[in-house]
Every structure is written in structure tokens, then in C-alpha cells.
Amino acid sequence: MARVTDPKCRQCRREGVKLFLKGERCLTEKCAVERRSYPPGQHGRGRIKQSEYLLQLREKQKARRYYGVLEKQFRNYYKKASRRQGITGEELLRLLEMRLDNVVYRLGFAASRAQARQLVRHGHFHVNGRRVNIPSYSVRADDIVSLRPGAAGETAVRSATDLTASVANWLQADHDNLTGKVLRMPDRDEIDTPVQEQLIVELYSK
Image (tube, rainbow, N blue to C red; front, side):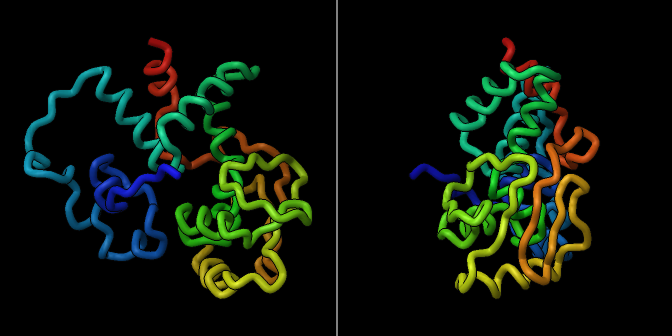
């Protein structure tokens, strides 16, 4: 199974923003972006020639890394979004937000999307009472996401809920019983992904 193995802090530094890939560490002074706010590598502090293509590429890479999606997966999401009614860029972000691993993270049941992906992959979560171990599974409105009874990951999940200050308006979470509900698809202003999705559309439209 293909997966990204680059150091997570290095990915954040390359994009120049916090992608919150390491959970609690991203909220402390140990965050690599706070300590070294320039790109990694020998020429990280050098002068980079900006171009239209570079800006578009960086936005696409930023979105990929934010959601932990590989290139082929991301392109497939774009193709699916382009066939839907509505603004392609916004539809792309909605499709990514409705991934099960992202919903688990948004509900506060994981400290990071990487942890959420691992918990889902190990079969710790149910969707509408059925065990689902596919992180890319697309949830729908009115779906119920819950921790499997007796799951070994309960301690990690409860620790993550302690770090959660609030839950997105399009979700409903019960941290005591470790269950959550998808109320509806999110609106664009409810998605705090730090990307300009129009640049991604321009890149793939070439």
C-alpha cells in the first residue's frame, strides 16, 4: 500500500503553513513552522522565483498533504468534483471533507488525520453500526460514526477529545459516548482548509 513517508514537519515547512499533521505538537512551541519558518533543504533560505505554475502547484500539494491523499487519489477526487453541479473547487473540498478519516478527526476522535486514518484502518470505528476500515470511505448526511465497543483505541480517542475545543457546525459529537453524526455536507465557509481551491482547478484545467 502506497503512503507518504516524508517527515511531517518537513511537509509543513515546505508549504509554509501549519498543516496540523502531528496533532498536539503543532499547538506547542516545538512546531517546526514556528521555529524555522523557511522551506527545508540546503537552499531553503534562498530566493525562490515565483510563477503562476508554482503557485498552483503549491496549493495542490498543500491540499494533498493536508488531507493525506496521494496524487492519483487527489486527481480522481478532482475528476469526480468536476462532474458535480456547483463550483468545482468547492465540490473538491467537500468530497475531501466527507472522507471517513477526516470526519473522525473533525469530530475530535483523533489528534491528527494520520491518527484518524490509523484508527479507521484498524477497524476501531463503525458507520451506522457497521464496521468500516477504509479511510477514504465517503460518509453521507445522517450517517452515525461511533467507536466500536471494546476497541483498543478508546484511550487514544478519549485523549484526543480532551484537545478538542469545538466541532464543526455540520457535525454533531457526543464525546462522552464517543459517537458523532454527520448533519449535512459542509458549506465552503465552514471548511478551514488553508488553500485557494481555484488555483488547483486552474492547474488541472491546463
